[in-house]
Amino acid sequence: MAYSTIEIHTERGVAVLWLNRPEVRNAFNEIMIAELTAAFGELDADASVRAVVLAGRGKVFCAGADLNWMKRMGEMDFEENRKDAIAFGAMLKALHALKKPTIARVHGAAFAGGMGLIAACDMAAASTETEFAVSEVRLGLTPATISPYVIAAMGERAARRYFLTAERFSAAEAYRIGFVQEIAQPDELDGMVNAILGEIVQGAPGAHAVTKDLIRAVAQRPLTSELLGDMAVRIATARASEEGKEGVRSFLEKRAPNWLKAAKQAARSKKKK
Image (cartoon, rainbow, N blue to C red; front, side, top):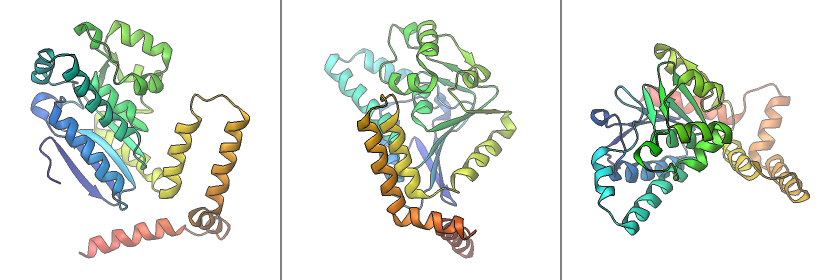
């Protein structure tokens, strides 16, 4: 599919999805939201993609909402705004629900909706010069659509401060509160992301998918007998799967599992072409 606001480059099983509106600091509009939703579905269905990196062209990762889009929203009635918000929420949910591991590669700035994109990813690495802000209250708005993801990523206490003050905070602070897992100098950011990817691709694709589902099932749930029974079923299913059996066999036989062999063969075949 051809896109006008994003780019996707895939190599060695890793898809890098670039927000590509640098002239407006990668700000959202309805076109980008629709294209991101479609792209996440496309990447989820592509068996050759092992991991997805979300990044931004130009000087910043994402500055939030496009000003022209915001102007149009201000002229909409309640029902039109509700439908628009549902579309934005569906895009974030599609990113959060991806079966493949996702990494946000953050630089420059991440404000408002850009914070939602980062939080909907599984993990994030930011350059040390990045500024963050949940800026909605300064516009008389509320960060409702992004809140489930951002609160889960930074915690309720930090959310109370940064949602209510709307102040900008640094990459070091984002790291301190757990909103990003790694920070690096700007010229070392790609190396940091690649190091994380190197760890990710050691895992099995099927195991990644069911483990992401496991995290969603367990997070915030009390330790009940129902939960323990659910966990027993999940691990038994994994152990009985072909991927699980191969993983244990390869470990005991001190060899690489077949999913790593397949990835290397695919990479060699691509080089020959």
